[in-house]
Image (tube, rainbow, N blue to C red; front, top):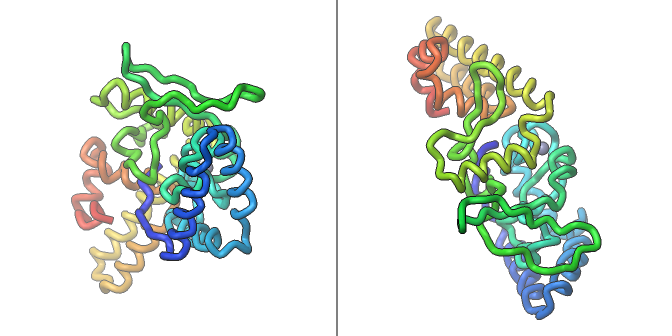
Amino acid sequence: MIKLPSLPLDASAATDLSQWQVEIDSISDYETRVNEGKRLFGSRNNKRNSTFINVREVLTKMCHGHKRCGYCEDSVADEVEHIAPKDLYPEAVFSWKNYLYACGPCNGPKNNKYAVVKSIPSAQVVDVTRHRNAPVLPPIAGQPALINPRLEDPLSFLWLDIANTFVFLPMEGLSRENELRAEYTIKVLRLNHRDYLVDSRRTAFGSYRSRLREYIEEKANGADQLLLNLRQQELRNLGHRTVWLEMQRQHRLYPVLDSLFSQAPEALAW
Ligand SMILES: [Zn+2]
C-alpha cells in the first residue's frame, strides 16, 4: 500500500462535489443525510455524469501502473470507494479526498466495516460498523483505524518483510494507537490473508531485482542514456510498487540489495 499522488479535479467537478456535499450537510436529520447521500451518490456516480467522468479520470491517473487497486495494488480497480463509508459518514459522501479506486476483492470484505481508535482509558480499536437493522445513529468520534492512502503514507505504519514471508507487519516503534491502526488495516483489507497477494509481492521482488541487475549490466556495458531511461521507466511500471519502495528502504539490511544499489545509487530515487 503506497501513498497515492495528490491530484486535483477539474474546477467544475470540484465545485459540483462541494455543492452536492453542502446539499447533504444542510439536511438536519442524520438518518435522512445518510439516505439522501447514498441515493444521490448512486444516481450521480455513473458513466454519463460529467463530474464523475472526471472523478474516474483522475482516480485512474492516481493508480500506480494499470489501474491497480489503491489498497492491495494487485487487481484492476474501477469502483469508486468511499474510504470512510457513506453509510456512516454522510459528511464525506461527496468529499473528493474520501475517494479511491478499489478492486472488488478489497471492497467486498471491507464493505462498510470501519473502526476508530480511542485512547481513553487505554488505546483500543472500537468497531463502528453499522449492522443490518441497527438504528441509524452517528458513529462515535475517534481517529479512523483504517490508514488512508490518500492522506497518509501507509509505509510510515507498515513494514513489508521482503526477506522471507512477504507479509505486512506494523512498523517497529509506533505509538500504541498507530500500531493498532496498522494491525486493523492489514486485517480488514486482508493484505496478508490472501495467498495470491503474498505470492504477487514475492514475484514482484524477483522482477524488480532482475530489472535492476539488467540496468546495471547495460550501464556497465556503456548503454546510452536513452536506453537507461527506458529501463528505469520499465522498472517503475512494474506492479506492487510497495515492494520496490521497501527494497529501497531496506537495502542495507540485505547484502545482495546493498550491492545492487551501490552499483546504481540513482535507483534509490526511482
Ligand atoms: Zn484491492
